[in-house]
Length: 119
Image 1 (cartoon, rainbow, N blue to C red):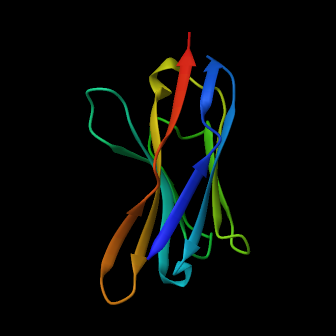
Image 2 (image 1 turned 180 degrees about the vertical axis):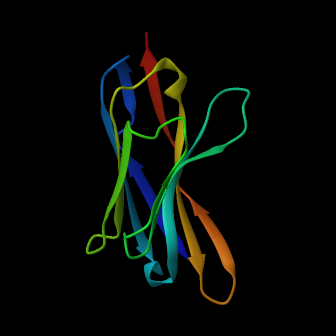
């Protein structure tokens, strides 16, 4: 089992910045990737950014590329999402994701943190 605790959401004006954190505990050695997804009202959950176990490989959705940066602290089993130049369309509940590969693929999710960007 893996437990995820998120922090850092809140409200900000357009153009502002926020930093999300997600701390993993439990069977963290099974990590394949960690990342962030988001879900806006009435929309499906979508991937925002992911980072590999080694930290060498990252992925960003086109909508956040150049504005958001994902990073991780392997010693703390924590992943961060630095969000700059926020737009109203970034408003959503952001979920931390831990993709585990041991004997099978398992996705673990955080509880979600609200990000609200006002224009």
